[in-house]
Length: 300
Image (cartoon, rainbow, N blue to C red; front, side, top):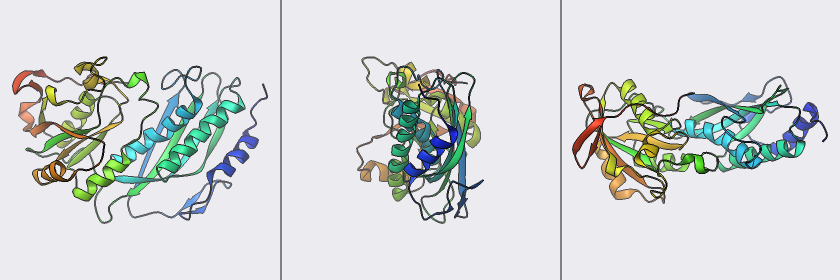
């Protein structure tokens, strides 16, 4: 097995990236130089072998796509379009050039799907496991608006999720499409009052929204869309991490527009409503109170 050369890999990677008119100075200098808007999102996520993926059993291209898409999901949940990213590879000595290039090609594919540019990064040696870190910026989808946050939910708002939940460990955690298109279509109808991506689990993300919005919530378990009910349970849908769906709240006006005008294949499902903080976060079944909903999602 030929050892991986930092400069040979960087030279090869630069040829794969292509041009972007919003990049004034691309990779090749100490930093890239970008054109920016008045509001810029900035996020980062690190993925580690045997924690977030398995390099021995999973396709390298899927790993590369995930490394990009977990960040795209975060940017999209803010009502923003991803624009640029930098990538850091920490590479163990036993990783082949073929696998590393396949990972990078997966990243290129994910970037093209989200109209996103790679503008640089870093390459260093790892003593044991492969680690990939992506830092990403984004810009507002709707001009002259504010980013969507976790803190805007109001009493009386409806609570929605995209897609279906649970069972991500069977493969969805690698092969998922971040809900960028869905956010763009939703913003055409109106502005959600709050939004978060479901990376650690529905129960955990719901607690984040309620805490930052200073509200409570009622969740109706029979309305939660469970992915593959033959193998997954309500507990999976509530608490499994890495679904990468969206959880958001909508006022009455936007809720009516969703009911009447949503046309995408991806379903938006109303699973509950926002109530006063004193009511807490509670789970109901057929309008009968079951119990308080603890935050049992994934915690690193």
